[in-house]
Image (tube, rainbow, N blue to C red):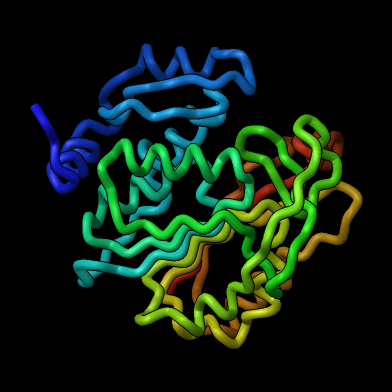
Length: 267
């Protein structure tokens, strides 16, 4: 049986999360940084790393952290840090007519993203192979090989570095043809600089997700992000992601970070 995009989108959401435990275990237990394929969402999707796929799948499709309600049949979504495209697939499964502008600076991951979106039969997604930043320029990007690449984390050495173009988020917001239903910023440490630059342009945004990254040995700026959101008229909830259970005794560093927090901002 052949599936059209609308039928496939409905099938994806109906089947989650009650299927594929064995497949999810296979992904979780696979060697790191090993290219794999999976049919967990129906069509064959590709990933450069099974454990990171499993982690993203858990957050996006099981916990549904990006789910939102909209009366617009075609809401505009800006996806900063699209990785291999699972968030885009979720958005299009939730709203088959939604307009998505997806940013992914890692050239290899951007290729995975485009391929997975095509495999799902979702057309009309604008995948931009560049990083969101406070200016239009070229910067050094530190590749991690899965979901941790960053403009900011020079501790990443596995894949080395590449030069990537950047696009100023402020310009993207100014050029949007309608209000932004959801702005997702999972940009691995660039979030404070980006939000600082467009703090007075966030009036066009209805909802904002920010994954805050605290790099060990650097100034923490989560208070500045929350202040920017408050002055832009948002309320928010903040949920720790990676944190130490006993911070006074031990503060383990993972991927160069000693703390991560998910911020959900809404009006």
